[in-house]
Amino acid sequence: MFLMLLSLHLSAQVQPDAIESNPVKMGWMQGFPPPDDKIISAVDGSFFKFPALRYSVCHMRQFMPTTIVKSDPANQYKI
Image (tube, rainbow, N blue to C red; front, side, top):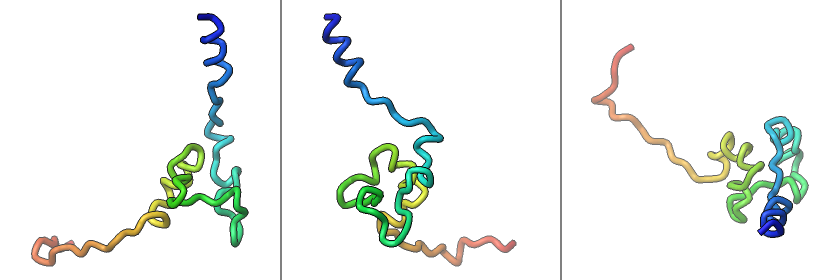
């Protein structure tokens, strides 16, 4: 039992904190083209893995197609 708990403890990943996982500090998507190890992509799923997820949340429109939804002119309020 002790060995199993020890192996679980040793295999647990230590996640970087907020400062260490800063997207600018980590160099995500910097430069043109970005280095291969700093590219975040929806194709390979890297955009949804921490710590790249911090960059992805702020740049989601660059990963997924979006569309403009026009408002209904009949329901607009005058300002």
